[in-house]
Image (cartoon, rainbow over all chains, first blue to last red; front, side, top):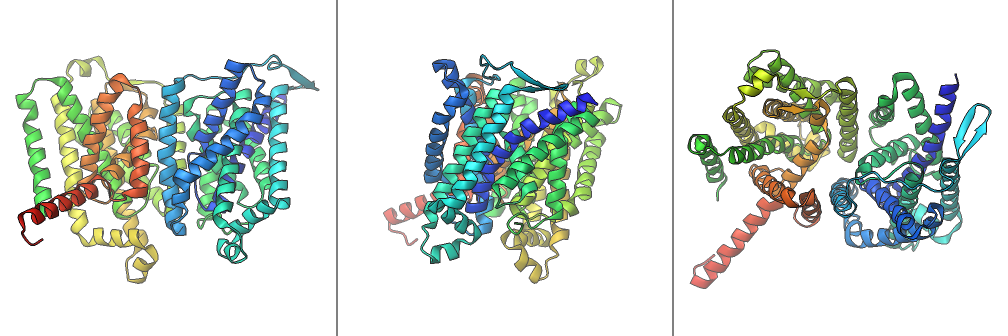
Length: 290
Length: 315
């Protein structure tokens, strides 16, 4: 049936963004053992960055990534310095719990701030090539979403290279494996934390830009994207960025299929159900699974 | 202030509030106090499972919503409101029993995000099944008496405060607090953790369901899914933490401050109270885990010491 195939294609295109949204969360969770539930709000901020660069300076959204990513990186450094740097000082169990609470407070504050500054309206970016589609047989693929998927994949691949080739990337992975052992081998664990958090925030900013191009941004998208990212992280486990990307695609397709079978409004439910089931079956969480 | 004196002060406060509708004819004031009482009930109910048993339930809104849905349906169908509210509490608690054993396989933050997802599943489903707004029949609107809602709110708030006061001193409550401090150690010293956590959840969600019943009785029209909105959970969490999580007075103090700021700030600046409370909340989690109650006690002790020094009395 044509409709289902078209839905699957759209699901894959959206799933790439889920993967990118989850990559940052996965990195931060895996390395700092900090669950930042404000990740969706960081995505929202990145989205507004791209939106205003487009609305005020007429920057192409893909070009604005060159500004949004470094700006998000900087935001990550600031957030780590004033908030999460204090959270990581606690032992592991308190750390996860406190990070959840601090992230929640941050999410609330950022949401309220965004409503104050930019109103609660939905905004999106309409470029000259926004309506273009590529026809493949009976399927039509929106160019802009295809480009977004390509950018998302490129960013994930870049992150993978960064973590496997770069000196500090290896330090970050070593810290994720066992921070005490990493400390003993002379790695500056605090700096690895800072880098991982900043990179995670930068990824959120990039994801926000792509969300605003292909879809739309409003102050209240945060919770939804945090949940999507959490679902993907739970599906993929920690440790592999490419695995996270694939899990994102999987969630996109699963949502598309459930929308086709049960009707549109239920597309949000399937991911949550998978999430709860996986969590309950693997109750000790994700640290063990690699 | 000793715990007993503090408890008596709360009782006196509730007794005074019971006289309010007799002396005051202003609906805005009654509405305002009613909102505070609803918030006290909701926050105190969350406080049982999160503050005493240490399980951060982020799906609390689902139980509030279930209570509202049940009570509204029965009440519009002709049942007396007290019975309908009780039924709402029962349905919420029964649902808690149903999911509790599976949910408590999760520990700490995993329990939190698992219950958050559960709440969202319920909210989406209810929004899809019941998309129509629920409005009271015309006859009920004509007979709407705010004072009736007010007394139900007062009764539930008093009930929740008394429940927590009794719980805090009971064996049951001590067991819960042991789990909160260290679950493995509690189990090792003979506390049946799962059973106690389930009891905390049932008590907590039952009260939340009753609060939902009050909401269904109070609100003339609302979308059924609105009662399942996670903001109810977030309100309860903010109020409890800011006031003092795991204390009797914390949620009461937090609720008064929260509703006060919310009602007065929203008039001029939409959602500004959330910015203030978000920042305050972070500060409390990182710097003052005991909340306002602890801050007040410390300030009181400090003042007493200073006074003592000045008069030369031994401290």
